[in-house]
Length: 481
Ligand code: 5AD
Ligand code: SF4
Image (cartoon, rainbow, N blue to C red; front, side, top):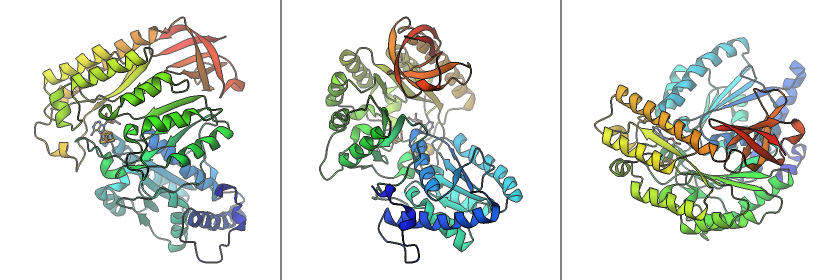
């Protein structure tokens, strides 16, 4: 593996190699040189801090970015009082966007106190030209801007910034490249996200993701299996396979394979205990996948199946390519095959043209499916998407009222649904010390529900039997068996 090559052995006197990942290891070694100088001057290594906004994709990207920074010689900082600060941004809804501008002002103040500080921005927001324009003009203290397609280049961009001494902007419109074998610094030793594909081809009419993450590209199954085997050898027992639309995995590969087939192969990996995946688009969820889930010992009893709206009319406007009835049929099929499966979803309220009747259809789906939990979102207008140009944007007060009614319904049902497992004994993967209750740990059931019980740090990363004594809303208090 490349990662095992000691960077000192890389010849950094010569020209950088053209091919990846060798080129990036060259620049990591170059950065190490700079780190040594920094250390001599200040008596300590430079610190690096990454703040991640948004989804699990971004969280995984940040682990890769931190891996590169550590290989380059940085040590992890606790907060923004660090020598290198990177915001990995999200733009799926406007409020995520606004948060970043707010934080940038604050970083300006920190940089005045520590003029050597480097500030970098990456992620989905940076793929929007108007955002980059605004930062270039109004936030001159930013040092490096890059996007979603070239995160593997972080070391090269830092090195450029150090030598050129001016703002470095490197945004790619799209890419076919998938660079393998770069360092990764995982947040949890025992579980990990694994990208299986990048980008999205669905163009739901409200969504900016296809514009900022580019077209669908799948990783080769061999690379995925190889990565997971490496993770398992390193102590990982649970993986989350990540993609914007995992059900269309493999379609564009030279030798196409289905997502269901990939799951069969992942299941074979010895030592791996649990498999999760995200996100499933209902339109592409195959019978083959349901069959694999039914027969699997390792795939968790949980499916995140975003419905977005319960109104077939709105679903059509959203370009979701299924109707309310088709969605409900799919749920029935899933439950018939895997009776104890827990279902979660995403719902948008206030999509342009949504009437009270449409909204009632959404409530109806929520009541029929009875989700374990649901992420509810107020529609956010994203520039450049078809929905942004639609007439009949719903007034804010109407949306807010619908949102509150939906949230109440979702929460009431979730509390009842979670009760279903009260009194049973279940396998729990212990994830961390409980943040509220000293002497307690927090873990997750196969169906993703959280349970707190008495225990110590030695349990973290283990799968143990826990009796679920008391359901409290959306989580349990339990006792280890
Ligand atoms: N407004 C509100 N919610 C959105 N989502 C995506 N785009 C928007 C938008 N413009 C939600 C969808 C998706 C989730 C990740 O974010 O529900 O499933
Ligand atoms: Fe956005 Fe739809 Fe693609 Fe999900 S499937 S990322 S909602 S366009």
